[in-house]
Image (cartoon, rainbow, N blue to C red):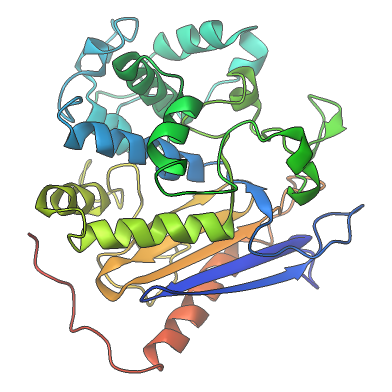
Length: 348
C-alpha cells in the first residue's frame, strides 16, 4: 500500500477449513473506509473460473455438455473459417485459435451484436495448436452455457452457485444499495466516470454486464466458501463422480503441449502469481483489476487476494509481484504450522 500498488486489499486464507482474513488500506481515493472480508470487488477474469468454469463443470457432470464436442453444436453461429471444429475443451484451455481480444464495445451496440462479432472472429491458428489467452473464447462459452440451459449467466450463477452455497456478496450487476461496500475501479475514459459497482471491463459492459469473461463481483469471504467447496469436492465430499470431474477440470491439460492451463483454471508455472511453494496439484487464476485465487486441494489450502489496483487508473504495474510474494509468505507460514498430509492423493 505504501508503494501505491493498490488503494487497499483483502487477504483471505483457508487452512483445512479454518478461515482467516486481513484487510489493509482504504477503499478508494475518496473513500477512507477500510476493506474487510465483506468488501465487494470487481473480480474481472476470476469470473472465468468462479462463474463460467464452475457452471461448465456442473453441466459436464450432468451429461448436458461434452468437452470434446464442437461448440458450434450448441452455438451454430460459431461456424465457418475453421470454427466448426473448435471444441469446448479447446476454448477452456485457450487453445481454440481465437485471438485474445477485440473491441466489441466499440464495434457493437447491443449484447446480441457483440455475440455475433465474437462468433465470426477469424481464427489466428488451427484449433489446438497454439495457446492464446482469449476473452473471446470465454464469450463463446458464455453462449454455449446460455443456449444449453435457456438461462442468462447471471440467473444461472444465482440458481446453481450463490443460492446453494449461501453466498451473500457474489453476483453480476450488484444492487445500488451495495455501492458503499464495493471497491471502486477506474476513472474510465470510455464512460467518463469512476466506476463503482459497474463492471470495469468494457466488453463485459457491452454484454449488459453479464459475461463469462468478466462481470462477477464478490467478497473474499464468499470466495473462500467457493474454494473450500471445490476442495471438498476434490476430496470426494459430493461423491466419486464430482471428485473425478473436479480433478479433471483442475489438472493441467497440456493443450497445446507445454501450456500450464487446466480447464478454465491455470496451474502453477515459473513466474506465475502462484509463487514457488504451492503443490503441483494446485490451481488458480488472476483478474485484471487486481484479484487472484489459488487453491492447493491436496493440502486443503486456499489463498484469495483481492484489490482494486486499477483505481484510479489501470496504468499501475506494481501489483503483479505482490500476488506471488503473498502466496509464498502464506505457504511458508502454512509449512511451518505443523504436520501435513503426505503428498497429493491418488485420483479416484
